[in-house]
Length: 114
Length: 114
Image 1 (tube, each protein chain N blue to C red):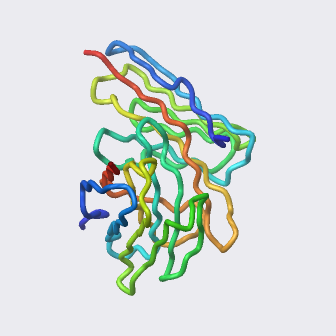
Image 2: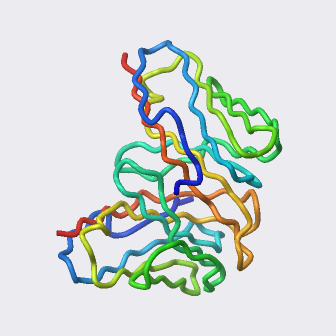
Image 3: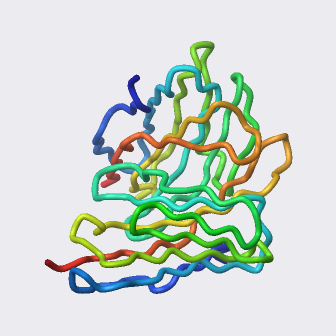
């Protein structure tokens, strides 16, 4: 079975632009979470979606938004990009949102904002 | 403020040495995961610990969850160059909206020199 896939792998944008990142979960997984990982730090939680509904949101500004589609794939959108948005954006999928639920991560999208 | 502190932040050791990485918090977690992340890739799940005082072994890796479920440790015996990577702990707590909130630690960067 294919693992979590993300696209694109790398992206370069300039300040003020917007970006859309995509994620396809493992087959059978209905929950997708998004994380931001700045170089040298642990991932920071952005959003969790389950069955197309937002179930959790981290401490990120409204410039960050996401959605989940009927096939459980997901998009993360970031508007009005800032230099500080440069990071590795990780998507993780899991079967549901219950406790002790193992997450499987994709390879990430490396976003550079110039 | 970082909810989960890992120590040490960096560790460079010779092949064959033993090491311990610590993950500490003032919060109680319903479960805790350990991941290893290599450059340019997403984190890969190593283990999940659930019960206070639980010890799990994965070949040369030993994971322990504190009795109060606030801290954890990872011990590697006879480290090998293949163990090189960023080790991340992640604690899971109930969040609002029916999801489990996952918080990652600050990370420990391990280098094993042949």
